[in-house]
Image 1 (cartoon, rainbow, N blue to C red):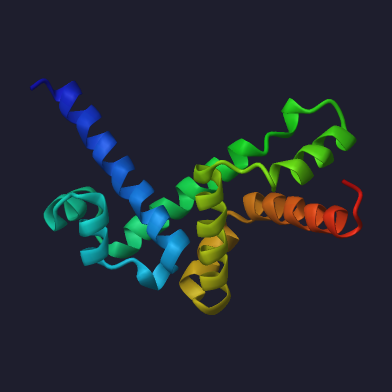
Image 2 (cartoon, helix red, strand yellow):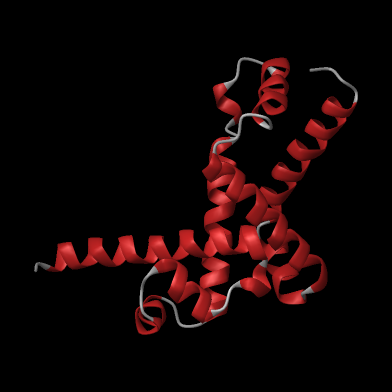
Length: 151
């Protein structure tokens, strides 16, 4: 097997572990992510997980990065022709989330909750504050608009 194929396989395995982690976080919170549960849900061995990630916390942090990136990618402002169109899209999208995006939102909320109580995760949130502010503003705008029945 060439080195390039090994790299691709390793990347797929890492991504699979991260996506499985996100699914567990979305359903059970951060404390629900145990090595045993990750092994069972992902179908990879414990040694494979720790070959790709040094610690459980590293898996959780990399999964958080993926959650941020995926959520921000779904909310690209450039795709809209004005504020009204953008706000309408946010309002409508909350009811039309595909399963993957819904999982990312649930995982984001679990990470956010953990960040309130866990200083380490709070520091991670502070380090990516620009992304969080963007997401928070969008969520607040959505709630304000939805609660007032504008859509």
